[in-house]
Length: 349
Ligand SMILES: Cc1cc2nc3c(=O)[nH]c(=O)nc-3n(C[C@H](O)[C@H](O)[C@H](O)COP(=O)(O)OP(=O)(O)OC[C@H]3O[C@@H](n4cnc5c(N)ncnc54)[C@H](O)[C@@H]3O)c2cc1C
Image (cartoon, rainbow, N blue to C red; front, side, top):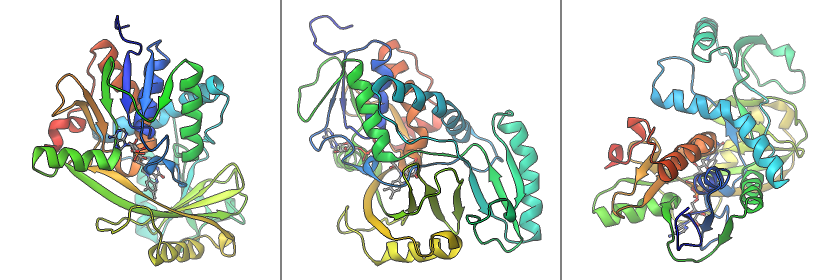
């Protein structure tokens, strides 16, 4: 606790990185205030997709290890968030299917099962299964075989943001649109923050990459998500299936949808015949924060002495969020710095 201040931590930005940091601080007893002029989940964290998917289990590195830890801790993390605030994030470790295109891919996939045994420490499985194991859901697969992993999970981004918000409030935290700095200060301001920082430093340290997605009405809540032909197909708990996403470095408007998402949807319907006729409920676009290093940008703020930054979640911000929040709370509250080299601010400067 900092004497004289009404809060111990001011968090600027109410996306997944800001809310996860606020939650990790609040659950340790710190008084937190989240400040976002646009309100919670107004940025890329307010979307539809919600894949919490691992990298392939080979050529292990610090980034993959970090992501693995975050995915493994997600189950208890989201359960605690739901129990504290009484709001479900729609989390389930429901796994993932990927088509196997030919004999060579089949051999590679089988080898990766052995690597996963070791690298995933027996906590999750990467297996080759027959497509018939998933009638009425399996993606089209030329070999008749699929990769099934049990590490991949899903959650509903908007519900996850609402669940964190409820849990933070249950611990006495505040969320507001405007407030002065008090206590420790962290900037988790997404792609706009990266653009502002680039302007301040006079060199690019990151940018925004737009993504469009679409939500279908189709109930398959217990089925694994599908990843094929660069498309994510994610069944959610509420009888919907989310499809993502485009990846656009150049864009005029951050929040509009166009024919590019229709092309992704056509691919998704071809990959997974079960959703061929599923009605469209919503189209949504957001802008992912991509740091120059492509990894998260965590640590002391490069232009605001004594303050902190958590940015660069890029395509897997929800997957990394739980561990990012914990690491930032360690650093800000306890002075304990366990940020991997690749994730340091310096890696993007
Ligand atoms: C189409 C699409 C699909 C995606 N799919 C997935 C997926 O399946 N799995 C996954 O893990 N990730 C996915 N992502 C990526 C994920 O959404 C992002 O990595 C994540 O949301 C980034 O979170 P953030 O908190 O850093 O930023 P944001 O959610 O953008 O939050 C930043 C917040 O800062 C606020 N802000 C800006 N300036 C200020 C200021 N000066 N003061 C205070 N607040 C400010 C904004 O209003 C905003 O609310 C997807 C992204 C998109 C666009």
